[in-house]
Image (cartoon, rainbow, N blue to C red; front, side, top):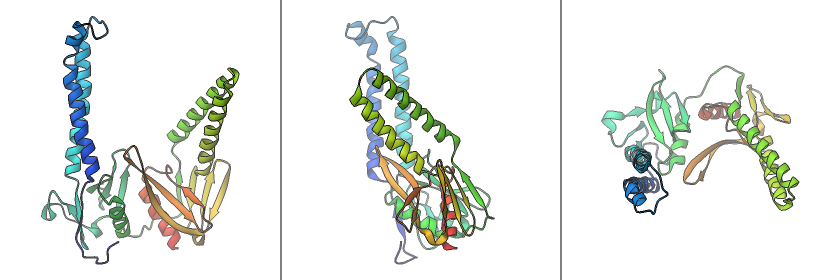
Length: 288
């Protein structure tokens, strides 16, 4: 948070992501260029015999050019994504304050676009005021400031959220594959591999059982519904509500975590498409 609420700060795109984007352009551009020589390589006998070398060359060229275009659009979007804030609002650094200034009080809510790697700040008419990219440096700090500026939500109780069907079906499918794999390995006498698959399956099932499938929020209590039970939480039981960030192969993964006074942490991700709204409801519940 800021010691001076009027202090102006700029959040630039992380240079690591820009370097990855430029590397992608060079790497896939080189592969696209190399694919143009596949017919020559094929005629020299160093490539598997085929009657359609030019067609294969064209297919690879189009595919790699597609990756080049994707990498270029990523770099272009990221270079224009810097955001500056002060005590009155925020704006796009590239466009300038005169052309893109958004007052804090104009922001009514936000949508977390996980697939797009950004947060859309939404106005009173449902319009997108400005986009905040995950790849900004000190993104967590900027997100905390934005969340602190939201008006208190006043939606009627109870508020209900339910885990989406797709992740549940995906988890069931993965578990079924593990069951088949364990059965096959055991039948073939691969006991070490069977033990390894059993250990991985146990960890996956344990984590799945710890995540609530649904949540109902009242003013006085929260009801968390797990696959094998329920948990009732009072406002005094809540220690904090926060977004936790970690990285998988360079991509930011954001989880909404409810931390209780007894030391237990509950992963609330997947209960709604817009986890920022759920975060606001949990903050309102904690405040009482």
